[in-house]
Image 1: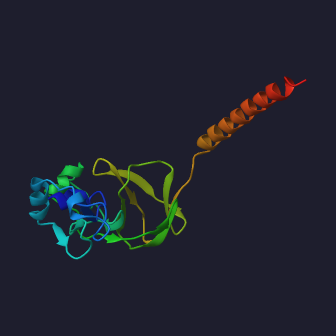
Image 2: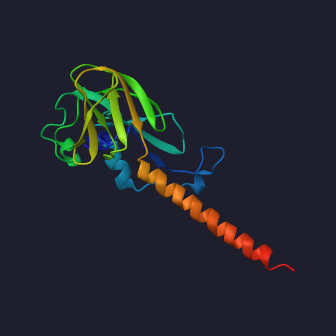
Image 3: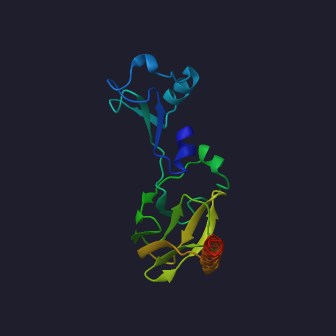
Length: 192
């Protein structure tokens, strides 16, 4: 059940740290034991699979209910799920990861008759365009974002900083420059 909940947040792995470094770089005596109740809870989750042989200082669990942070899903994929906790009863299914890239722009191909689930809070600065057409944005699961394109095609999700934010940064830079200029004038004006 924990995997379903974490999967909706885009969390693919759960890692617990037993030592600061693997042997021989860390002594077993220096280990900070993980509480037994936590280990038992993680080990008994049906949707978390423990990966062995990864690192002797870590316990790594793969989430089998993981949903990509940018996934294409069938229209109405989140119907009846108003809250993140609804995923414990009715997990998201049938999603495929789409849109790859870094920072403020990701691209990819969106299939027809799908919505795009993005596991991040809504922000009007993010815009999804499919074949040059801007798509509508809505809230999903009470906290995430879903985009509803009219058709599939080549898609670009990018963040465009609003002009008012750029203006505020410019004003701050001018204020810093003015304060530095005044300070310089005081220092150079006081010398004989």
